[in-house]
Length: 255
Image 1 (cartoon, rainbow, N blue to C red):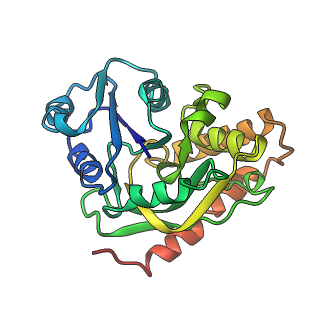
Image 2: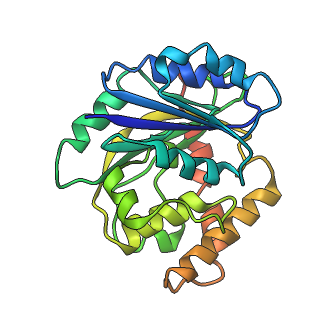
């Protein structure tokens, strides 16, 4: 099974080496790694050039943000399954994509997802948040739930049918996409209860209280736009749903 991994990057020289090595170290044999750079002004592209043997496509040009970059990556992707690993994310171990392929070998499944840990930007063994997901049931999106996007792998055929990221949402287009796929169109997804990705803190959606609030407003707007009857306090519910993730983090240590 060919798996396309799309990495969106912009001025990511401090972190992208870990991401590139993480993909290159995967034991799964058929990987198409695509890097979409937003015209970085630091050394990001020089670092990417060092990994030319393990990268299938590189595009560097100005874009309209990370979700625009992801859509560009989708246009390149030729794998049966597509996943995203941004330039400050790391796979938890070398067999993540092997497990993805094994899960997606079931023809009744069109997507899969797992758990994620947010880690300190400098000390990636220090867990700050532990995002434990669950099997999807109807009504979860109305409560602010979504699969952790860097762990969300979807068949390319689903993207062809249902489209990519809606650029109206600058911070929560991944929520909107998962909602459209699973909540509205009934894409069958399987939850794998283990950590697949380490995500550094300080990303676009969690680098300030302002962005967190704005992101939650976007998620509310997406629910309403997709016909879900969610109350205004949905935004508070989504914020409070993160509290257990911080509590779990204190009980978890990584090597």
